[in-house]
Length: 343
Image 1 (tube, rainbow, N blue to C red):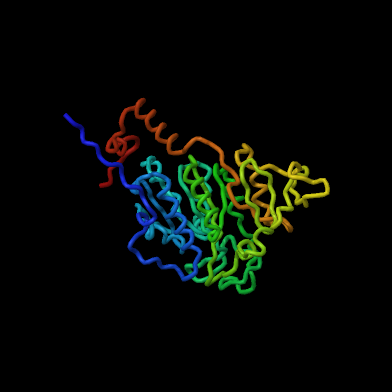
Image 2: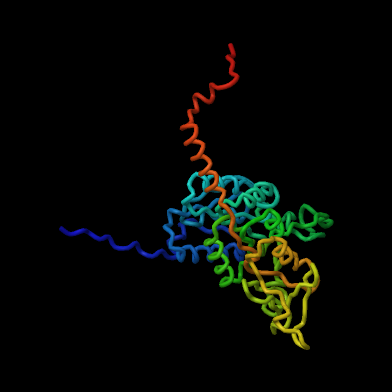
C-alpha cells in the first residue's frame, strides 16, 4: 500500500498579492511605493494568502484593500482599528493589517487608535503621514506644521501638530517604528519586523503627496541632505549620523544632545540604542528629536517589547466564564431581570 504525497504549495510571489483593480492614486504619489513594498514583503512571510486581511478607513491610503489580493474591508472614517480589533479577537489566527492616514487615524479615528494601541491587539498598523488631507483636496491635518497655509487655514494653522510616534508611545504601544516611502530597503526591513511582532505594531510611513503637499519630507529624502537630517536607529548600535558619520547622540542628564565625534569624543561616549528598554520614556525622547534644532529625524524601530495579547486574554476569559457558568443562552438573557410587556 502506498501513500500519495501532495507536492508542497508553490511559493507566493509579489504578483499573487496584486489585484486586477486599476491603482487609482495620483501619478507620483508615495502610496505606490508603499504598496510595492508591502506586496514584495508579504510573499516572504511564508503565510498563506487567505490568512491576510487588510482593513482601512477613509482617505487616499484607505484604498489599499482594493489593491491587495487578500481579504479586506474598506470601512468608515476613523473606524478601521475597531473593525480590525473585532476581526482579530474572533479570528486570532488571521494576520490583520490596518492601512490608515494621518487624518483618518489621528483625527476622527484618534480615540480608536489610542485604545487599539494600549490594548495591544495583534494588529499591524501602517499610518501614511503626508501632513495633509489629500482625498478631500488639501486641508490641513493633525500632523500639519504650525502655521500651515492650506485651503481650510488660509492664514496659517494655529494647531500644534501631533507627533504620531510620541502619541503611540504615550499609549504604551509595544512596537513603534518609522520609515519613508522612497527608502524601499529600509521600509521593507521595518515591515518584516512589524509582521514578526506579537502585538500591535505601529509603523508611521512618511509619504509624499505631490499634488497637495509636495516636498513635505524633502529635507529627509533629498540625496545631498538626508544623511545629515536622519538617523537610522538599530538595536545595540550607537546613535551615529551625518554624511561622514561624524555626529552622534548622547544623554546629558535627562536630555539628549548632539556631539561631534573627534577631539577625544568617540562612539563609546554615545547612546546605544535599546529598542527593548522597558521604560517607554527612552523611546519617547527619541521620537521628539526632530522637533529640536540640530537633531535628526529617527528612522527604524524605536520600541519593541512584549506584553500580553488582548485577543488571547479576552478569549481565555470567555473560556473561563463558559466553564464556570455554562454556554450562554441569548433568549434567556433577554428575558432575565426586570422585564415588562407593552400593550
